[in-house]
Length: 377
Image 1 (cartoon, rainbow, N blue to C red):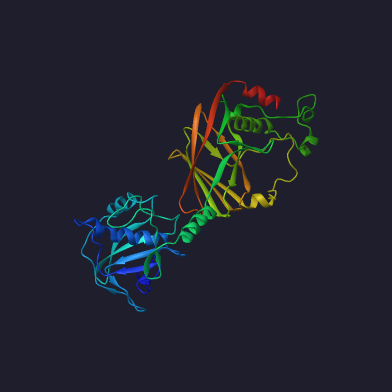
Image 2 (image 1 turned 135 degrees about the vertical axis):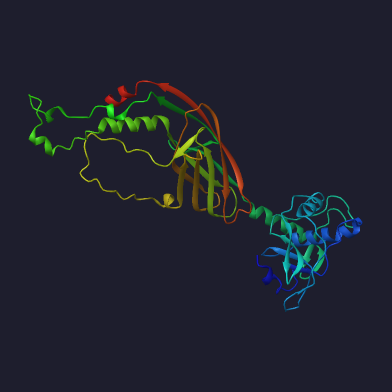
């Protein structure tokens, strides 16, 4: 929002200029009602952009508005309480003051939002249930047809998203609560785990066979198995679903969560399945993604100093009625009990962040047979 550009606008359904402040302090209800009526009219107006009421300026009629300034100081919270206490639903708007040409002006900023707005009780000569609307540079009363269209618009533009856990085995939604079994093993020094060797690498006298130099036996197999088992028994791979319940596509969605790693942690990477044979090719293997995977990107970053893990899921779009799966997030915890994960959902056409809580019921078991499992792996 650029104040200077607004000063060159002409009055209409998105901009209005007032040479004086609204009479608000120590005045009768009828005078306060002028502000209420104007705010309602702009909030209900048919427009494609945020609306502004600028006090302390005179419409320039095609030229830059003349700045005359205002004297009154009033806090945004006073206007918020006054207006939202009298109407049918909470309205999003703000009031602030700024300086232009060394003079103070006031600005009411009213974004596009769900409507209609109207008074629940008569106030200052204004009738309850009347839908005021801004038409051009004038304020009028909306017709029944206009009010009906506002309701249809709300239904059409309603944003509704469902997020929960998904069962990949039978392709069904589990819901927003799942159990998680985490296994804790006694600590073992990885360097004390014996190397893996084939019996035929050595002759009858225990000498290393020359032919074994070409052998591809992975001597680190047991140690890799130790890391693999320790991880997979602590962290479990979970799949989330995002379902668009609305009638419009959700564009550039971002789902964020912050975890307390003392309670529960997450990661997007897991150790490779260990092999007793070294691979012939040790370079990177290109990860070929399907179309759905390309639409989803998961980033997880842990800050051990702060004891926090940040999760961000980025999604290009979700079509109306579509269910998109987010796979490859591993959750684990050393503490038993229910763990709440608070998600915040953002998007290009989501007017305000949406919240969603998921719950993981952690069950922790302690075991001491890790080495036994390693040598049997």
